[in-house]
Image (cartoon, rainbow, N blue to C red):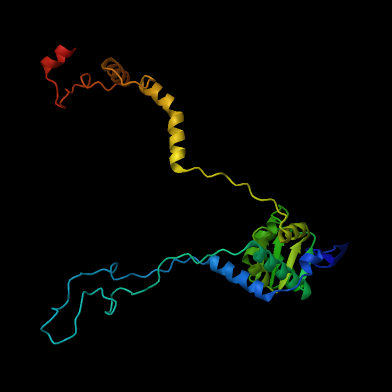
Amino acid sequence: MPVRDLITGKKTEDTIKLDSSVFGANVRPDIMHRVVVWKLACKRSGMASVKTRGEVKGSRKKLAPQKGRGRARVGDAASPIRRGGGKAHGKRPRDFSYSLPKRIRRLGFQSALSAKFAQKKLIIVKDLQLEEHKTNILSKKIRKYGWKDAVLIHDYSEEALNLRIAAENIPNFYAIGRKSVSVYDILRSDKLIISLSSLQYLTDRVHGNLPRPVKVPMVHKKKLKRSVMRSLKPYLRSYYNFPATTTPATEEEVEFAVSGSGLEEEEEGIDAEGGALGLEEKERVA
């Protein structure tokens, strides 16, 4: 497949051979539909919320007697059948996301790439470097090349920094990193532009050859608290001058610990019952 230059938009002398198992596979619209629906469901915030009859403002007093009026029974003003009352079975915050097998996600990504290649809407570019991060410069190039409705997959390099900044204000042109691109991003645009440095990453992503992220082992709260307190115990003992012993402390040890921590109540002018000491008692203590 020919490789184009982003600066001139023309084909270069370089050609690249695409993996037929990634860009020449059978297109599965049903799998792509499942992946797109899953992606959009995971993006939903799910923050819609209405007030029930227990949350609306107002009195909970019964509006009219139960009997004797000859009319229908009524409750309080927060009843769902009254104007301004609460909503029965209304929307509450919820999570719309659900799990989808990795095999289905990889198959949908593979089908999306193969569909763009079969429609001849796949473009491989060599250089992503722009002189300036000006939207006007990139917009003129896009209109000149006929890439008005396209998604460009870059490799997070510093050379593509100006391109990423310039593409933020262009409608229907998306510059997305190779790690975060999805089937929905590929299918919502007419053309798919892939940088030459991102091609091998996408191939490994379809085959599942990417390195797995390192998982940090989770520590239970109680175990973590227990281990932290166990490690801090000698420091606490040395700070408060408590003897490191398992036997019950004697009266002399308690007096030594209290005197070392500066908690003697007699020195502060307070007796054991919490009252202030008189002058005679202070002189006697001194």
